[in-house]
Image 1: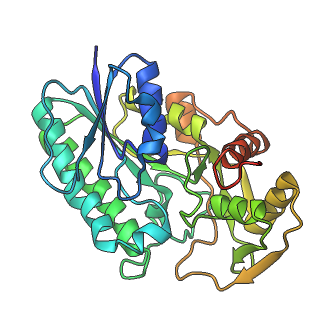
Image 2 (image 1 turned 90 degrees about the horizontal axis):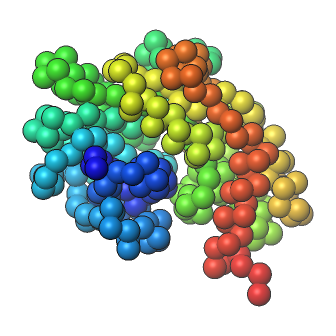
Length: 315
């Protein structure tokens, strides 16, 4: 039985990866310090003999006993509300944490996949974004703590690949959604659902003409798995190229939830990207991957998840 270490394993994406690798017959070690993750996301796995949880901060010294075949580094705050609250920890997990895990991968002779982000492209001047685009990032702006942590993460991963000949993979993740998202994580989708289900007005930042492209979590996990098992070491975009304006997206949530919420507008945050759409030509060619779940289907499934939460359960 092969072993995989998943950092950020109690988080939104990390917990879904734990499920996938358990399903594939791996022994899964989930590592998390629970700063933004939750044990609720993995409680269904705690009695599984092939699963173990390690409460640890990867920004400090990291070691695990025994053989490790694969490492998936997904530890990091991922929403602005989190990384603006804990900016230094965000920088540390992308730099020190990545360094520690690359060292662990080297000592274990393990293949490592690091979770980068579409935010390395910043507020893009190229649309849609291809892997060859170097980005338009403000390193000293409020989002720089996340954007630059991920850009450094990619750089040090490539250095380990080139210098130590380490087996590395880099995924650039675009907006992803699905069950286990935190309602209070500050991103548009959970915020819109939360406000709609509470009967509140929906808050759009800016004029709502900015665009996003939302990928359902099951599609993303499939892309991650395929990339890990590939022999390609350069960054690969994984996301859904179905682009929509934030105004259109808010209207979809209002219609889906049947609320009478209105859309209200607040000031756009500093350096918030105006366009976000992945070019997934490389993933299609390299991995034979493209998203299968439509936004309508994915949003319906996500609504079911949010409605099952204690605060929204109908009595």
